Image 1 (cartoon, rainbow, N blue to C red):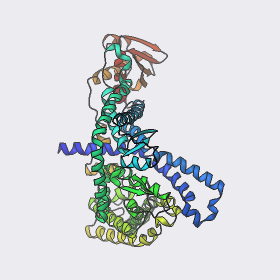
Image 2 (image 1 turned 30 degrees about the horizontal axis):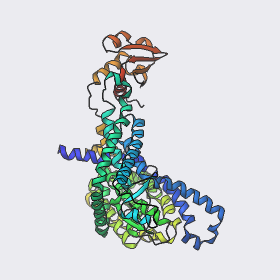
Image 3 (image 1 turned 120 degrees about the vertical axis):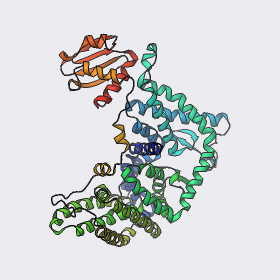
Image 4 (image 1 turned 60 degrees about the vertical axis):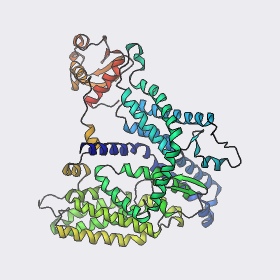
Length: 544
C-alpha cells in the first residue's frame, strides 16, 4: 500500500508541476487564436474585408506574440517544471533550469558535430533531412529533437540537483558556493551527463514514443471514451494534470503532419492547423471538443436535475446556488462547484458523470467536431477557438449536440438521484443545510490526501532543532518579521530587539559572531547561514 501511495504522490507532484509552465498557454493561445482567425488565407477569401493591410499588420503582430510561448515550449517547461517542483529558493531553481536546458542542447550539438551526424540544414532539402534525422533548432542551437520532453526531463533533473544542493554543507573555505549558488554549479555536469545519455538512448526512445503515439491514435473511439472517463476519475485526487498536459504538449497526444511539418501534442498540432488551409483533423481535437459539450450543457442539465429533485421549500435557495454554478461551467468551463458537490454527497453519482463524459466525448468526436482550447472549455474559449476560426472547426456541432447532451444528463441524474435517494442540494435531512461543496471538503470526507496536504508535514532535517532555538532566541515567532541570508550571515528582522538573546546566539547556538543593523539581527554562520535561513522560513511559513 505504501508503494502505491508513493507512486501516486510522484504522479500527482509531477502533474502539479505542469501548472506553472502551462499557465502561460491560455493567454498565448487566445492571442494566437484571435490573430489566426483574421490572418488565415481561407478566412480572408470568405471575408475580403479582412485583407485590409492595417488589420493584417495588427493581427499578424498579435499572432506573433501568441506564437512566442508555443514556439518555445521546451525551455518554458525546463524552467517552469523545476520552479513548480522546488519548494524553496525558486529563483536559483529557475536560473539553473535555464542553464541546464542550454547545457543539454549545446552538448547535444557538440556530440552530433564531432560524430558527423549534424545535418547540413543549408542543403536544398535541409528541412526534410532535419526531420528525417530527428534534429531541430532550439534557441538557435541545432540539436536533437527532444521536443517538450527535453524541457520536462531538464526540469526534473535540475530539481533533484536543487533539492540536494540547497541544504548541502560545504567546507568553510568554499562557503560562497553553498546553498542556492551551488545549484547551477552541479547542474552543468549533471545536464552534460544527461545529454550524453540522450545522445545514445533518445533515438530508440523516439521510436518507442512514436509507436505509442500511433497506438493512441489507432485506439480510435475507445481511446477517446477511456480518456474521458479516466481524466474525470483522476480529478478528485488532483492527478488529472499528469494525464492532460503530456497529451496536450508531447508525442503522447499524437504526432500530426500539417503542411509537411510534424507537430507533437494536440495543442501544437491545433495551433498549426489553424494557420493552414487544410481541413482540421478531428483526431487532433478528440480529447477537447467533447469537453465543451458537457461543460456548457451536460453539467447544467445535471444542475437542473438536482434543482427539480430538491424539496419544494428549498428550491428557491437551491436554484440560485445551482444557477450560479451552472453559469460558471457554461461561460468559463470551471466545473468544480458542480462536480465536487455531487461527488461529496454521492461518489457513485460522480462515477455516472464520468461515464457520461466518455460517451459525450466519443459522440462529439464521431460527429467530426474540430475545436480545441489549451484550457477552460466554456463559451468564451469556444467563441475564440471555434467560431472565430471559421467552418473548418465544424463549430456548429456544439449546438446540434447540446440538446441531446443536456437531456441525457438531466434524465440520468434525475433517475439516479431519486432511485438511490442521494442527498443532493435541497434534499438534505437538515432543514437548514443547503450548500455546494468544494474540493477540500470532498477530499476530507473521502479521506483523500493530495501532495499539497503531505507537503505540510515537514521532514525534520538535522538543523531543525537549531532553527527552532534561533527562533526562540530572537524573541519567538511573533517577534520575527523577516528572515534572509547572505553568503555568511543569517539576517533576521525583529520587532523588539530587547527580546533578542545575543549571548545565547553566540555561546550556545555557535554563531561565529553577532551584529545588528537597525532592527535586523545578523548572526555569522558562514556557509551554514543559508541552510538555517531555509529551515527557519519553512518553520515560520515565510516566503523568500
